Image 1: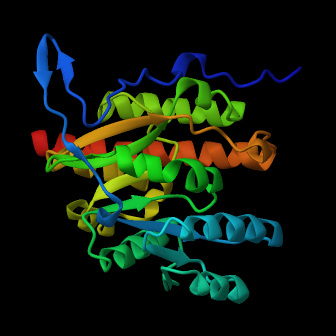
Image 2 (image 1 turned 45 degrees about the horizontal axis):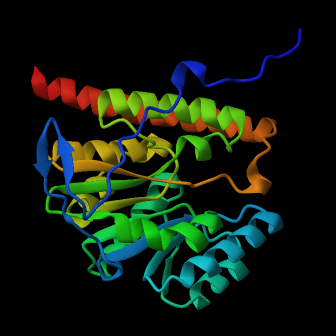
Length: 280
């Protein structure tokens, strides 16, 4: 029996409403004021690293060197298993490195965000460390376009429909499901799975309190924390395409995507359980 390719037909990305910060927006015949935009001096960066092989270390070195050229303070929580790589990170300009004693994805995320707090910036930009194209071509523009208002909790970098099609089939399928479920449970519709997002400093204690067992479910849990605090989730669309060398997927990558999907669902279940408990 020939295996059929995965398709995201049933869970395609929800249509994103495009807004342009700085310009008035009309809804239902009413003109709304759009907040000022974030400037770089308001932003610190947080990321995590785990170089599991020499090849992965090479990719991360190149990507993080690019990140360091953006001039923003960067907090990195490293796994600490390759001393030469950790030493390389410590030499990057504007970078603070920590190696958390507790293992696991959530522990690293929490450590990086705890370090980012020390930069005393209103917003933290969380990124995955291998987003070299984003660091080089899109990060500064994303920060410039992000709205700055007292009711902003999270601003997500969202892939355009065209950019989304450049990612491998299994990744599109699983991330399409994540986007669909987040839109249903959190709103508004958009791309919750690409990676980079700005988060307001007041929400960082909620992430510090997350259950380490959530894994990748920490992301929807963080978005839900914004919603619970009465703060807005905003999507900024861009042509964030998949790097050409990441457009194929083997069995290991497919399993990784399935694991990410299951952990994101676990995070959404935890959020839904808390919501249901509060409404009883």
